[in-house]
Image (tube, rainbow, N blue to C red; front, side):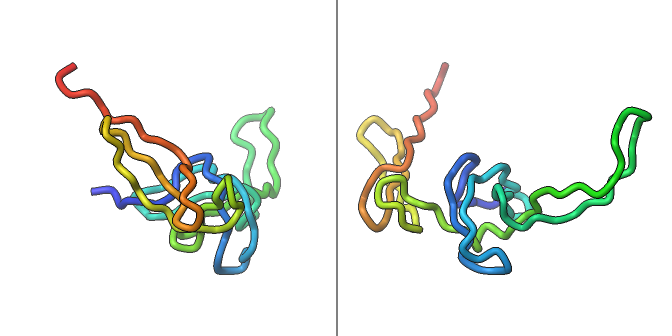
Length: 116
C-alpha cells in the first residue's frame, strides 16, 4: 500500500532540514512508495551520463535528487509561511486542504461520483 504524503505535485514547498535547508521551490515529482519528493532547485546531484545514440550528448549532467517528504513543508499562498496542512470536509463531499496558521484554503479535491 502506498504511503500518504502531505505534499502533491506543483505545491510550493520549503526545505526545513538537510544540506539544502531554506531552499524553496515547486514539487516536480512525488514518489509515494519511497516517501520522497523532488523539489525544483534543491538537492542538485551530478550524474555521469553516457550517450545512448550517436546524436545524444554524453557528459556530466545536473538534476534534482529526491528529498524525504518529512523534510519539506508547504508554503501557504496567502500568508507566505511554511505551514502544516489540515483537511476540511465540505457539505458536498469535497475536501479542502487548509493552512494551519491562517486558515486559508490551499486547494480543493472533488469527491468522486459513485455508480457512474
